[in-house]
Image 1 (cartoon, rainbow, N blue to C red):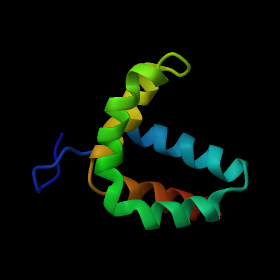
Image 2 (image 1 turned 30 degrees about the horizontal axis):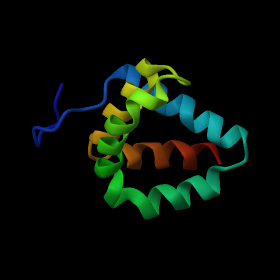
Image 3 (image 1 turned 180 degrees about the vertical axis):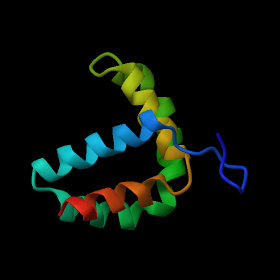
Length: 92
């Protein structure tokens, strides 16, 4: 699946993960700080996704490797943070 620009698009399971993440953030009352963080760090999302690859061996000891890989893959896609921000705004 690709966007017209040739970049990979998010699949249904990725969109579901973004919905779950937005629900969890809003449930904790962190929507506003999360939106501020997302907007300020948007230019660095790809770098962050690459850092997640480096940290994976340590993180999977405590967290699901499958979920970590999914988050990392979503962050690589341009516009994914915008989709998360829209989901957060819709729940506020």
